[in-house]
Structure formats: structure tokens, C-alpha cells
Image (cartoon, rainbow, N blue to C red; front, side):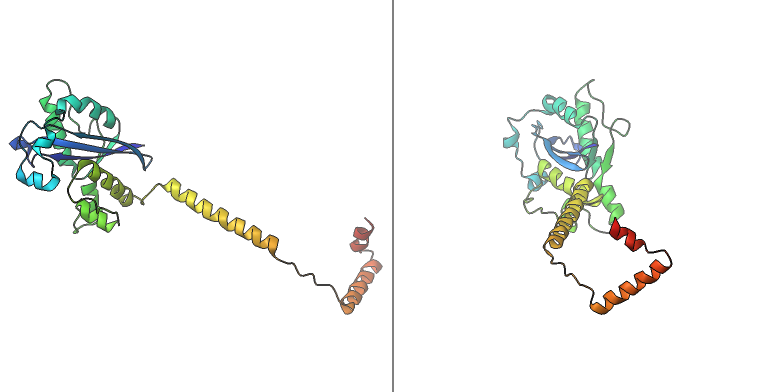
Length: 238
């Protein structure tokens, strides 16, 4: 199962005002494990960044001047996410901006939707699990004890990495079930090895029968011989 955790940064909040994507970050998960593969790209939006957005992510127009425009990097981006389930916090925002960018490239790219892409919104999921509580990415990191101390400003790749850990925590634990089973197997194996060592080093005490017990044993064997059922004699002769 391949999933891609995705985040974007933009010049502002509203597509209706002509705002554009300036950064995309993606983290790959395969079978609920972070693989280390990622996609990251800054993008020249060809328009000014709102002051409010600048305060959130700190990305300036000057920094983006020499970066590719969306149409120049879109194919590599689509190839990375192709066929994967997308994991996004507040998915309608990011998907809306991605589809707006795709619509500006005439007659080439279809929008991302439920018909061609499976999308999981972690904000919706968090609201189901933690109704009535704050479910921002920072709040979820705190709730699931995920270190977000480096998140002084928003960043698409940084936030995607944090969201990947939050998603794994929200949907069944902070790691793979297979890793947990392997850990349990190792604990069992270690316990068995310790038991064997203890058994090997333990001194066994041999208790011998005293004279009275030997006499009682002989008398019991004689009674069995008289009845013709003394199997003990057969064992000794064999």
C-alpha cells in the first residue's frame, strides 16, 4: 500500500483572488512505513505574496525568482503522486490550489478528484477522533507527543513529515504493526534464552531414598511378584 503525505504553501488563502502555490512537499509511505523517498519543490508563482502568508511561511518573492513555474515541474510532481493515496490535512485547501494550477495549463492535466485519486483528509479524521478539541497540526503533534520544535515557520516538506507521523499515530500507532510484532518476538526470544541459561547453570539436588523407604519399596515389589505383575523386574533385566 503506497501513500503520499502532501502539503503546500501558497501566496495567500483564496484562489478567487488569484493566489498560487509556492511550495509542495511530499513524504512517501509504503505499508505504513516512512520510506525516505520524498518530493520537494519551490515554485515561482509569478505574483506577489501576501504579507499574512509571508508571516506564516517566511518564503519571499526574491527567494522564488529563480525557481521553476508550476507548468515546468508539474509532470515530475504528478509522477511522484501517481497511483498513491494522498494524505492531506485540510485536503480541500491543498487540492483546490493544485487543481487551480492544473487548470491554468490548458488541455493537458485532469483535476485531482475522488474518481481518479483516493484522498484522506486528516483534519476530518482528527475531528472525528477528537471532537470539540483543537486539531491543528501543532495541536495534534502535542497530543501524540511528536516533536515539532523545529516548526518555527510553516514549510511544506517539514509539515508533510510531521503529518506523516501524526497520521500513523492516529490510525493505529507510531510505527508499523510488523515492527511491533518483531519487537515482541525478540522479547520472547530473549526471555527464552535467559531461561535456558538459568537452567544450564542451576545445580540440581539429588535426593536418595533412606533405609526405611528402600525397605518399603522392596516389600511393595514382593507383593507385586506374588501377584505376577511386577513389571519393575522386567525393566531391570532389560
